[in-house]
Image 1 (cartoon, rainbow, N blue to C red):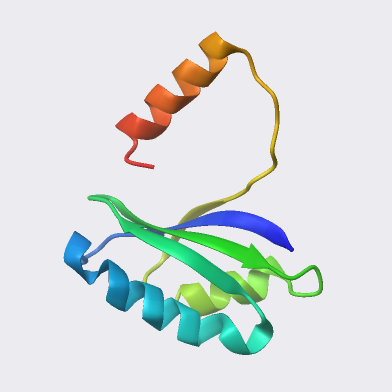
Image 2: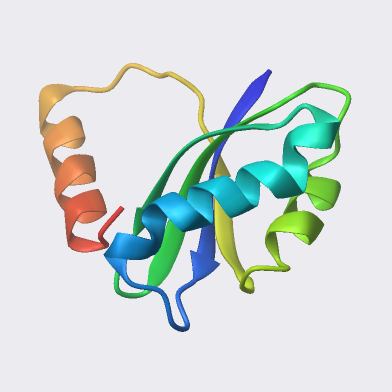
Length: 99
C-alpha cells in the first residue's frame, strides 16, 4: 500500500464535522480497498491520511474524494532521513500551514 495525505479545499466544514467526513470518505472508497486512517479539518483545507493499494490509481481516488470538495493537493508519504535543523524547519512550516 502507498500512503498519501490528501488535502481538499475547505469551503464550509468545521472541526466537529471531522468524524462525519471520515465516515463519508471511507464509504466513498472502501469498495476499492482504500483505507482512510484519519481526517483533520483546518481553516483552509480538510486533510485525509490514506493508504491506497498498488493496483488502484490515484486519479480514481482523487475523483471520489472530489465529490466532497475540490482537491487542493496531495502528497505521497515516503519515510526519509533529515537533519535536526531541517526537521525543525519542516515541522514549523507544516504547523503554520495547519498540516
